[in-house]
Image (cartoon, rainbow, N blue to C red; front, side):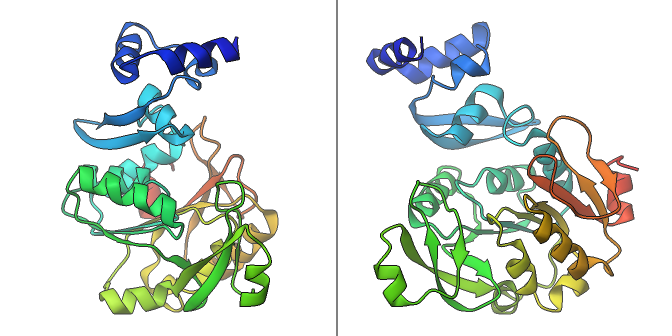
Length: 289
């Protein structure tokens, strides 16, 4: 069945318009639509607004096309993000990938200053194209935020950014074809360079490098205390981050992307990918407590 679906998809002309018609008549199940993708630009609605993005035949784009924003990728995290961005002044998207969270932030709050970071060139180029499609003015940089200013090597063997290692040298890099060199900066360096007086909201998805990123904020972590949607997929990382921010008066909400966020006492491995870290006032505004 899978081979038949792929064959029919590949020989079908004007796939985008056919899929739009199918979606209008009745959306197929995820087991079917995960094979129904195309290359082209499509419109994404966010409440009463919208943005455009290019479908490059990847999973995030495809689920966004078929399910939309509020029922698509990381739907509970995205619902929180939309509410958090509405009255934010400065928004930071770290590990922006193709820019889904960045695009939503700028769509929902066109007056916000948005900073977006993605270190992998091929992915950064897609982020840039999506921003240009919408004429969005976003400070975006091909940088990995870490605890050092310099260069590092990232494992991109399987087409996904898997790990960041700031300790590798040039000889080790040249012996492993899966490693590519990237620029790293401390977020404190970016804050001072860009004269960022505050950070209201951050999305952090850096594949296990969260501790180093937060360490690179320096004193700004405790002085700015941004609300964060942060990926926690490792128990040890969760414990280290808990120690770093335990005096910041954060509440911790575990997100499973199905049910409402769950208030917990400590940061552990997420039930899915993400945690929400916020103060009591933000939690009340989001109707979480």
